[in-house]
Length: 148
Image 1: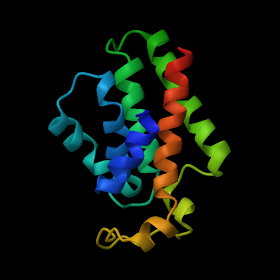
Image 2 (image 1 turned 180 degrees about the vertical axis):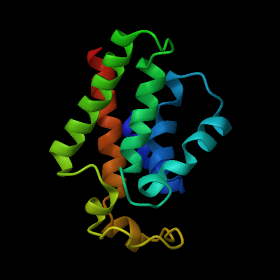
Image 3 (image 1 turned 90 degrees about the vertical axis):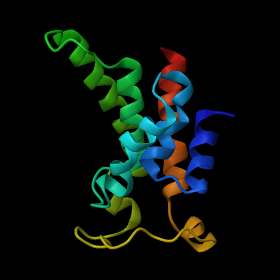
Image 4 (image 1 turned 60 degrees about the vertical axis):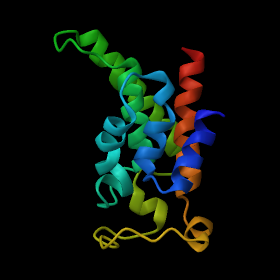
């Protein structure tokens, strides 16, 4: 199963978009499942349902940080490299989707739809772009990983 397929399966199981992409890459980093799930839990629905940066994209950023991030705050080259990877992922996503903002992907206005999490029904999966953006975010990171 590819990371994109795993992200789709996780989203369909009920994980949020950020969790779905972040957890899809569990095979590539050394964090236990429960910790990874909790760490990524607040980033779904565009940062805690604020509808800001897409959660699926944020999940990819988090996984990329674990795979390519820096741990020496004085290493400006490593920081620059990490930021470049994140910018690359965001640019690819935006080129494909036209935006990196959750609310724009969903056709919402700022401050709209901040209530309870949506119930996952067949209608939900059919009418929202979320499954597709989880797949896309995972594919973009996978493409990067495979080339580097």
